[in-house]
Length: 211
Image (tube, rainbow, N blue to C red; front, side, top):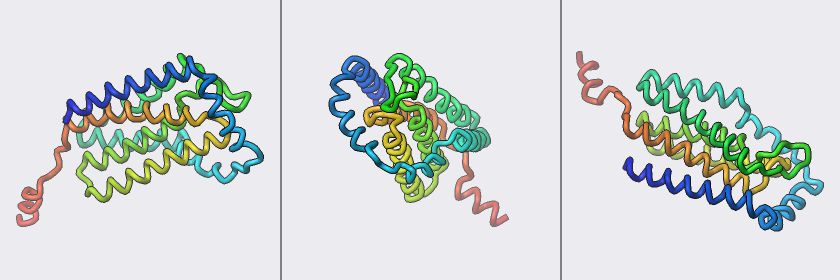
């Protein structure tokens, strides 16, 4: 399984490089498709309904949540706690690096270049993805972490749509952000899978209860 994660990571790296090259060198081609879409979205559209979705990607929410996940990881396995921190930092560094190299200008004037990939989408996606992975790692029932996975996907989509309709990112920026999210979460998956939690077995628990 570990080799599968590594192959997936390499594939994601290739996709990110290809996407960055296209965005940087074929901007005019992308704009022919995306500019009409953005004009339609921003033409008199009331985007205030999406403002409440910002809570899912606020820095303090993500920071506090990441700290909680890291602490839980440290308690169960120090390497997993470190992996949570490294994954979050890696995602931010990679986003900044790719954004600086591509230097794409956001749809709305006055917003700094670097909308590809979107740091807000990446940060939100990585955090909620880590929540799902931690539930899977500690052995939560399949139904539980699958439901949380669906919720995490919906939250990431909502954050992406909010940024698109507010003119902060292009649709392709949101798509590029998902590649960075995948890269980051695959990195964490390799560590989590290699270090299963040392939880009490059912037999040990039963023996303690009998005693």
